[in-house]
Length: 155
Image 1 (cartoon, rainbow, N blue to C red):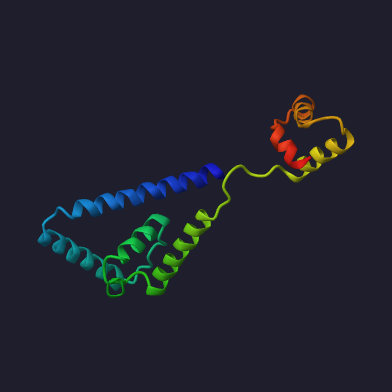
Image 2: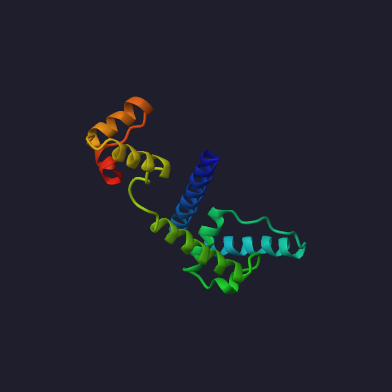
């Protein structure tokens, strides 16, 4: 599951990077060519809407690209397949994902509760053992590698 999730993230990043490259490349094209392409695409979209074909759900890369492009143009006038509320919802969701990522805890994850309890029990039962000895016993007997500083924290 984790591998497929990371695959989706990588594909999304690559697709967004491709959209960014296409956008940058379009800045070097003549204005008339961009206007003609825009008109061509609008005509196709009009046929699409005229036939009342239900659009596919947008993937993450499409959502990210539309949200970024919405900062550059008057997007409310241009939306035909996506409702304005949907684009605003995507924008809010993007900020939620960004802040969830920014507020993730830094550093190593904590030891499991049962291992912390085991360290505390070992320290209480063997008062003469120091953190080095407890860490060595955990490694030797249970194969659990814990640093003496970590043992000191939980002993």
